Length: 364
Ligand code: IPM
Ligand code: MG
Image 1 (cartoon, protein in one colour):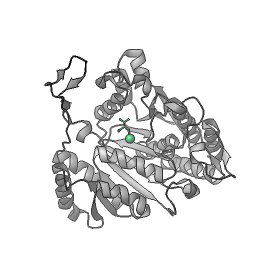
Image 2 (cartoon, rainbow, N blue to C red):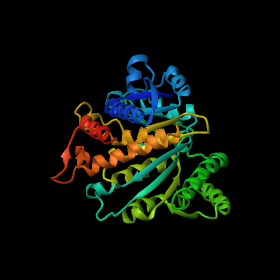
Image 3 (tube, rainbow, N blue to C red):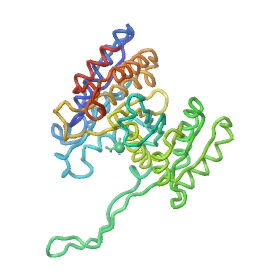
Image 4 (cartoon, rainbow, N blue to C red):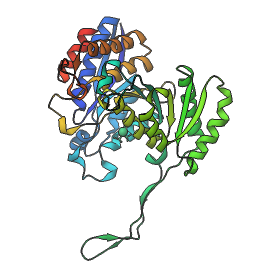
């Protein structure tokens, strides 16, 4: 039997709960499709800080590199808010993305018709957007720091500090992610929207120049441009008109949360982070560690379960198993199963994390 190596990083908060749901669904789908998995659990994030004093142990990166794919829950929480910035749990995520070379972040924002009434936006008939977010460049990885001209006053307050973070993109970084954007658009509804702030930022102007020079090579794709502020408005105004959005690291971070909310709950949004062919991809829900609901059973496991479905499709090429999970999620929703974040009607069958996981497994 074909056996795949999966590195599993449960992380913090609701991370372990939703990760174990997705692992259970993967196992069950694998049994039905004749494939098996060898799961290796690794530490990253706050739990790694507690154990080893650092958010991303080298051993975790090594395990990920030696795996076919990585499944991650979420990292971070208020417990580690006061640790030094270079040791924050979030550094684990950035370290994994950079360390594995995962420059392309796919965040599909798909509205399941059963959840239309859970959307905070009125009358959204359909929404099927693929956000292609650049993941290893821009302001997240640019030069940052503080000026050392600070003056500490006698009462302990600091005066005269300047802090900076820099948005920097090279033609190579922009070209490779735009190529992804064009290709995904070709495989979908052939519309690509580049989101930027070209009316203000030089780096955005470079993105536009490169996009327009590449467009003739993709004559079947209709390319348009939107400023990020306008895009955030248009997402609410006409969500069904978008197909593929390609954008920088930070704009993609912000817009994917917004798009997630329009689908009903960010608890529904999966993601894939991919690198050059042959590198293991990393799959995680777009939502965070939600420490406020950790351990309560309220976490919606569907974003992580759908991430597992993406893992099967994009890293393992196991399309049948991937489709099977997606269909099972749809069936569970159609049958009325809802975690509390996506509940909207009295006829809903409200379930907790384990209840939703069991419903999906039953539908497989
Ligand atoms: C995300 C998260 C991360 C990001 C944080 C936790 C570093 O918000 O994956 O969207 O900003 O990329
Ligand atoms: Mg985010």
